[in-house]
Structure formats: structure tokens, C-alpha cells
Amino acid sequence: MDRKLLLLVLVFFLVMGSFTSYVFFRTSQRQISAQNKGDPCQEKSFLLVFPNQVKVGEKATINAVVRTCDETTLPEAQVCLTSTLGTIEPACAPTNESGISDHALTSDVEGIAQISARINNTIDITTPVSVQFSQ
Image (tube, rainbow, N blue to C red; front, top):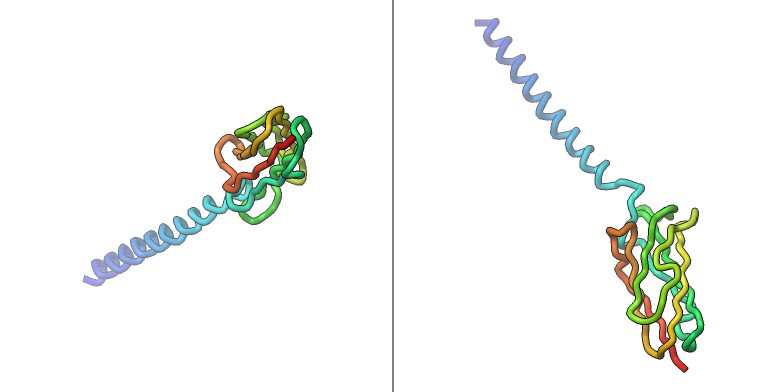
């Protein structure tokens, strides 16, 4: 009888230990994968434009600043810009060691250009910027 009780207690503790290890290991695994520090963060990345009002034929400079969720800059991220008006050169560019990509926008017609950006062809920067072209 004592052997059966001892075996039952041993099995109980083995199962309980396995279950506890599984629960704690799985939680830490989820936290590690959720905080991958090499991925760009949609909420922390943004666009800058200067000047935001230019004459037709002149150039506006657009910078995309790419950051991770812990607000560190992300070098070598590919940023592609699109505009509703005009031409962006280069349309796609990698970020430098400071996490910034440089682009220029020109237009031959009047109007307001809405510029949006996509990082690594997967993440859209949430806040677009605009440039007004006038005579």
C-alpha cells in the first residue's frame, strides 16, 4: 500500500511540475516574440516634410523616420513613398544609420499632394503628410 501511495504522489508531482513549467515557459515565449526589437513600429515611425508649401516645379524634402517600439531608430529598413500628386525621387530608399530615409517631391501642376509611406513593404506609417503646390 505504501508503494502505491508513493507512486501516486510521485506521479502527481511530476504532472504538476510539468504543467507549471509549461505555463511559465509558454508565457515567457510569448513575451519574447511580442517584443522583437528588430521590427519597425507603426505607432513610433513618422514622416516629416519641409517645406509644406512650395511653388510648382520646386522641391519639397520628405524624411521617413523609422523606429522600433522601444523608440530606437532602425537602420536599413526599406521605405517606399507614394503621392497623390507629383513625382517622388527616390520612390523607395533604405534608412541610414539614424533610421531616416531621404526623398524629394516635385510637381508640375498645382494642388495638394498627400504622401504616405510603407516600411519593408509590410507596415504603413499611420499619419500621412501633405504638400501644397501653387504658382
